Length: 102
Image (cartoon, rainbow, N blue to C red):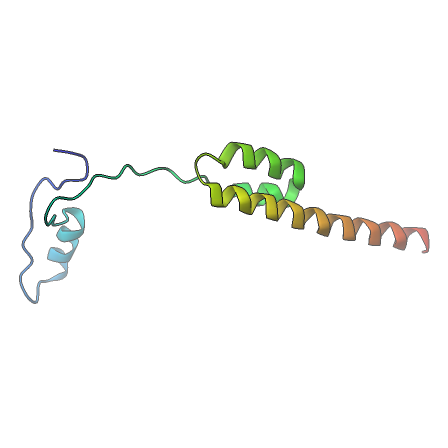
C-alpha cells in the first residue's frame, strides 16, 4: 500500500453525524485506480518579506533559491524586489531633498 491509500474504508450513511464526516476526511474513499502524486513542499512566504526589506539583491538570491521548487513564486520575488527598490529609491530621494532644503 502506498502512502496515499487509506488503511480502512469508511462508508458514510445518509444523514451521518459529524464524527463520520471527520472519519471520511482521515480515511478518504478511493474509487478506481488513483495515480499517486508526490507532494512537493512549497517555499515559505517569508521570502516576500525579505525581498521587501532587501530589494533586488535579496530578490535575486531568493529567485536562485526558489526557482526549482516554485517558478511562479520565483518570478513574483523578482517583481516584489523591483517594486521595493523603486519605493526605497523614491523615499530616499524625497528624504534627501527634504534634508537639503530644510
